[in-house]
Image 1 (tube, rainbow, N blue to C red):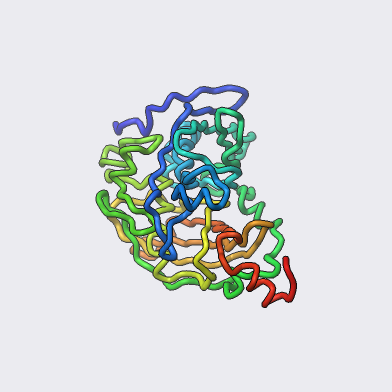
Image 2 (cartoon, rainbow, N blue to C red):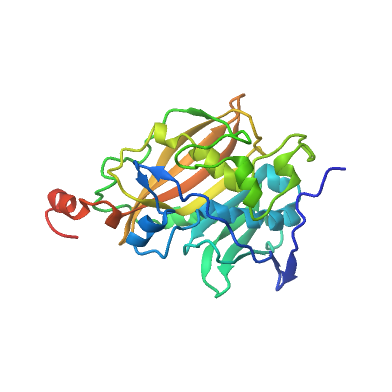
Length: 317
């Protein structure tokens, strides 16, 4: 017998699985990119109209893991998928709760939602295992996107641009670079939902597995070695994210190869967005996971935005 994956208190109400209230921790205060502080730094965030440094989106994936494991068992760790649209930011000290609606009959996909105490929605989307034969939350969003008009920050980025393959790995005490200035061991000390599966071999695969929220860190680890030709410095944030295990789980201290492809460009009043699909391969060349990420760059954080807009398009926006 292996250990139980989680000892989380889960309640059932109205056809949904509901996790306990949790306080996610902010671990990116020291994050840098483009040689400047990020949206997770208090002063940078406040200049852009936020209350303080924001908690990184995939941190919110961990509270769903016990709910999904309760729903699907071992299959969750092998072919699980979380697909989420981030609706509002979360700050350290705020409490959040994960909700997984039960799947419709004969389907392997559920609606997910995370809320704060005051009812503010942090994210919404879908959770699934295996081949669902239904569009995930972000597949549905991608199909409805309006193409980016009048790009400034992303004017040199093209759909179908693909990065070269990069080798990545995650060891327990490896600091994951400027983007993620902490280690897996440090994350496991504060993760909202820990599991013996993450730290030892007492699981069906007999070696420690990487939590889904840390797959985001692994897949982004070397992204700055082959960056998109976006203008900067500018501040970005994750607006949408989907992580799908194809042949999981992924293991601590093993080599993987990642490549990124720009699959869409979109925009809003405040942002320009590059949607990147990351494909992840094991050392045998088998695709084991994918990630779809919408990195939304804040127009107001790029100092010459208005001036360059006028130069490119001849008028103010």
